Length: 175
Image 1 (spheres, rainbow, N blue to C red):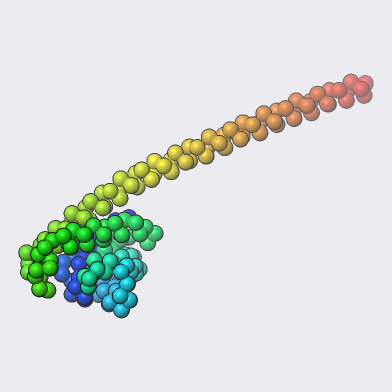
Image 2 (image 1 turned 60 degrees about the horizontal axis):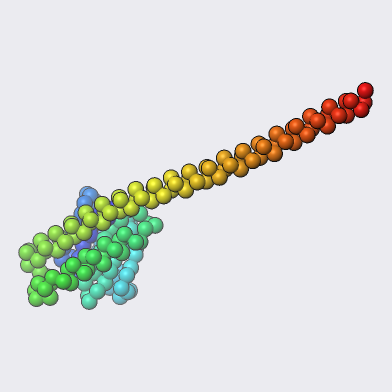
């Protein structure tokens, strides 16, 4: 999964945004921001088109990201937490009136970019470790299946030997 888009908004006004891929996010983001304001819940998730939009609402500021995997909520949640924490630690955020100046927008975009790159890369590392774990599980399962087959083959060979012995014994008795 990849975080492809992120933004910071005050109400329905986007303060800063960054997209790693081309696409028309504005319509979907507008719908999601409207949903966030209606629900007024801290976290919201919405699927629109081929993307899943995750939001975090803190003190009227919405932190939003779009991902391409509907199953994972851990990575977007960690990303949004880090972005909100980083932005809230910026004293300028509380000094400026909204809409912010271009310098603040640039700062927010840098925060979004750093966090997106970090979480997308760590997600790749997580996928590699997850794949290694899956390979190990498959190896263990195959080993167990091979052991079971070998035991069954042993039992089958024993049964074949007994059958042969019984046939030989019955032929001797019959003659």
